[in-house]
Length: 316
Image (cartoon, rainbow, N blue to C red; front, top):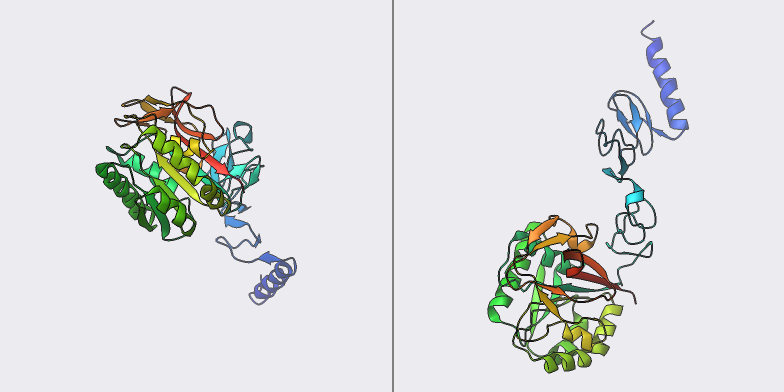
């Protein structure tokens, strides 16, 4: 073909492409529609194409679909009512990490997290659990009010160390202010993103119940503005730190069951608290299961019925 004709034909072709709203970016000289990526055998949506999922020629298994650029199980195996990665429909991701009744919840949703580990002894997977809980907050640094009135000093040090380790790994920052009394929590809480309640090992049952009752109005306002409450619990000399939140009308529990050394199983893998957590991990000494049938998401359990980590999204 005449060398002077080739550029003319290419120019006409490029004009047609532009007129139809196409992109001319290509790895192999083939124009692609906007939103598609050129591969060796054509143009593909790398977010949804099971033969080119996340990249050219990256095929999913035959029993998987491509959702948001990642191979995933079919939607028949997904709870579209609560899975934040597939909320209401396959592949619809909730940016806040919370899906309730098939709808993404906005940033004002509050959270109550119960963790049956006291962190007197820990390991990297346990660190991830507490880190995920604190860093559900979107701010950076996360402002934490830490209640330690009846907590053991070694427990406090180890919990803070676990959060600091996760902050380094995730690139997040947090700033902790201690509240030495229950009154300090009630007076200051609305200025913070997270209330962290260490296991109150030295408290008496009646103190925990009365403190929770006094906190109820403050906690209600805190949750309405999207606040996060994380409390840690363990077997010990009283019924459990959970009594603070039973007194506030937020938590229903009949006690704790010792699960020291048990194998903890992650059962809500899509929950924000489970991100990056292995499917199972050893529960350190003093770990406890909550004897509760109350509302919320069981994130980690033992023997499929004894929850060690629970998560309640609390709508305003």
